[in-house]
Length: 263
Length: 263
Image (cartoon, rainbow over all chains, first blue to last red; front, side, top):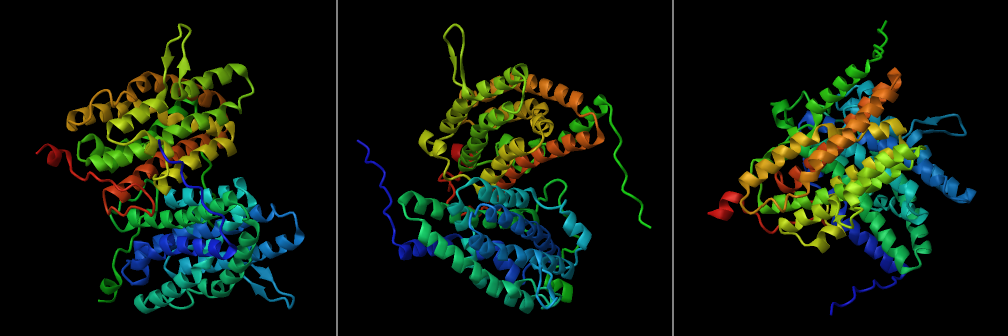
């Protein structure tokens, strides 16, 4: 006779948080081979361009994803909290009339800073299918799954300050053709991401009050880790090894490494 | 002054068909490096297992995709035509009481024939995120896009008899541990696919009567080619080179090539 599968235990909010952090420790893309090459200065300019080009599609989808999610809150207070994310990426006008151009514009500046044209980046017609399908999966997830799962899928922001710190310091140290202005996208994220994740984590700890909801929350974070991981898989496959670019996608011109470029 | 981008010409139905066939000639996954390794007998048993495991998810989604699409036809006659696809994959009972188990069951038999357990295959919890996202993109496409685009996205069936012939003959010739019973999934497809594509091609040629609709039809076929191509990209990356299996995914045990296995 086969034993019935074990039913997971109902976790305390603190243990749920610990389980979420354990998923990040195991699966967050800080561990991805492509990320290590990127921050260790081992990528060619063309490979960095491919990363910037494809990451733009993810960035451009964030306020769309957050608009869909925001529409699912029935309380104006919760919508105002979630709306901050949209403003962070699409930009805002401050009461004194000054403007913040927003994260998407700063990502386009990063892409220009690594040598791509704005038009080509915004057209987004040379991105990998792997990028497109992973990003679309994320947008559809927040549309089709429960609101709790949608909120939980944002919790990779718990782990992003650490990868941002590694990435910015590594890239500035190891690519002499990349300067701080190019990486300006990341600076506001160091405060925005913790604000976002503080709210989302508290929300999830409050609302995931059954075994089923807790397991769904954990699965939502694993899903989001897959969304990020598979985008880097696609970049590694197409632009590092074996280097088979899918039909119609960006083919880099500059294939020199940093060492070669400065020799 | 920049020249305005050229507006594509309205194509005759015959020229539209030629344009669709040209997309297949350029982008259909018969050209993918993984497919060539598969039919040339160059894969290990573990790599063939990974292919069978992941392809199951695509097969299992087909009748779901077709149910969504069928629901969008307002005519019973068109739904009856499209329903045949669902029966091809989910199975049917004939008037004389005999049954056809359907394509999904035959795929599970293929997976068992290459050494996987039914339970593990049907659980589908070790498949690549690349597989999951590409397949989900296809299901969402037929839900969210126009009916004409949804029908057009099935037109890779125009090209499938050729790849099936290559695959079956190549695998039988080159893997002495794979026999005709294991590949029985493919035999009915040689008549089912042309029946499907005859209808879909005629439908598209009849209904794509504006430049905008024709361009959308061509884009839908390119999209579907991306769905198939990116699944093989994922398999090549994880199981051939560089061989970085994403967190939580199938890790093959048998890494011997056919030559090694029979030495």
